Image 1 (cartoon, rainbow, N blue to C red):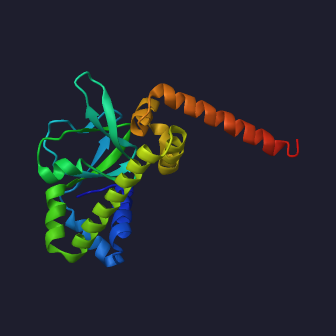
Image 2: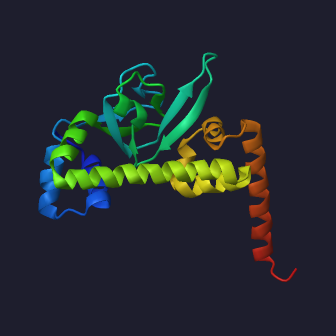
Image 3: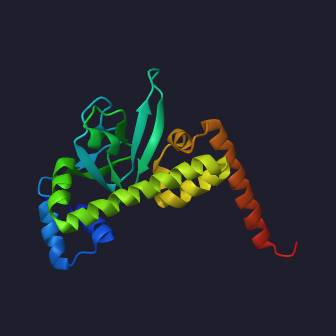
Length: 214
């Protein structure tokens, strides 16, 4: 396995975040994932096609990836978005080994470290560190899923957009507005209105700051 510096660092950070290994352990753990491979992506490239068996989990090294439900009419609904440092893959389909119900594709140029799910699961079943890592990772993914569900059910459109910007930071600009709207559960027109109102508020705040007391 030959990885770029960026991929190695992304993997190191993931292992530290979910397992706190020593420097010596890190070298051994990275070697455990010898069947992993780094894959570059151009915008629009597909990581997993709907109907294809899910075999790989992915660690986003650069760029943004999106997971979508595809409708018969050709439209798509954003299920999940993954930014650098995020783990991705259709977990439901990886576990069930059924044909994938979603499609995962690159929303920008970037790179993904592709990790065979079967290898990761086998490591978790036989080695203590990987067991703890796997549990921590699944719990983290569940928390992220719960946070998104909360935003969809309890926040209004403007609050959801602020939540999205907080989550995705600088990478938000890599995601098209139609995908953002779908991810937030609103129409593109509604999102445009939210963005316009936000800019107006920002302009008024800047004006008030520049002329205090007026």
